Amino acid sequence: MTIFDRNDDQPNFTNFRYGQEPQPADPVPSTLAVPHPNPLSPRGMLISCAQCRATRDWLLIHVHPNLVFVRCRCAHEWREADLEANDVAEARDDTFEEREWDSFEEMYQGLGFDGLFRGAYLS
Image (cartoon, rainbow, N blue to C red; front, side, top):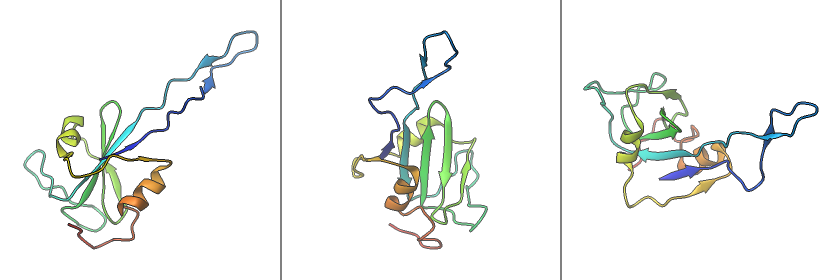
């Protein structure tokens, strides 16, 4: 499992108006990204990549609160309305090491979902 967290110890201020005290911005939520090597069929229909037609080896990305995205090895990514946060949580296993990344690009590259492995299935 991978956690991408943009929160840091420095507050990010927003909503500043002249003569008023600056208000802290809402914290940026953490993002959970979980590699999922198996096919997905949440409603009984097999999910496939619209770009390369792959049917397995996904990166499931849960963005707080209820947004779930699927990313293919070819780097095509889309919001999957048929998947929910608990589907991503269930895909987590004990063998994958939790890690924090500085950026989405670094995470995609580190996990092999940046397009370099386009057309390859990894086990």
